[in-house]
Image 1: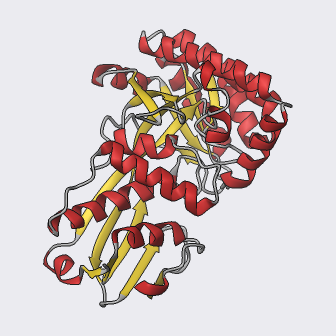
Image 2: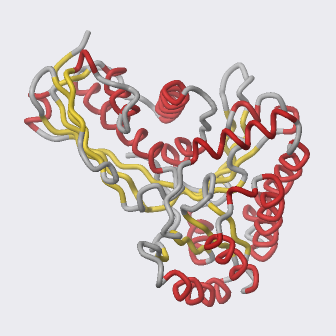
Length: 350
């Protein structure tokens, strides 16, 4: 049954935070792609960033739930029996409904720009579920473990969005670090297999060789993903997707062995394939940033579904430092665009 948590939160507000991510091989985490071609072992690499999204639960009037979030002009509040799941904040109301709580206010804030293709909405969802699980444990229930957090976050987002939702954003938020994910939606015991590619020292090395920038152009992934899925299902782009998957496997091996120049070359190759099979992921400013990275001897790729959002580059330390100055000069005239001060986050949600 539904329960007020107002008094619990009056004693001590509950907080949680989770990292966002950059990625390679994204979209393969969508079931419509991964499940029919499970024999080729579809994979995604993602790198958690210490640009964290924070959720704070505080008391509110009994029978009601209020949510406020950066990037949404107005907060939303509703009686708990009528929480909407189809508003800009509906996904988060759905998570609260799942736990059966009311009498709380949720505040969501993030270190990363809004709609920057770094997995922000999924990251916020995982942080929220973690916070709600903490409240649930105060009430005597077992707190959710990592795989349980990921499973609930994925199924909530996939269900509320109407399907075709991937899992990699939630996965990076739950586990942190640098991981290769093998998607096994048809598996009996787990939907994925996780391989940690780099230990803490390797993550520090990668941080020195990675550059992330926000283009100043916000993006919305749902429409773009639908187009990509349509072309994949029709067979139009499937061969290209399979070739990209081979490249991402190569990238994983190079990163694991700290072969940074080779890894940058693989990232460049994946971007070339993506230009063929997902041309709408590129806009003029992100194409320019990628060209500049490649000219500087680095590999570069859009984050998430592209079409704006963020770009990340990989290369040797001296080349990345040189590229940083080039990108900064390119981005300076664009409102909101900037180099993001970040590094690999070894920690997941907490």
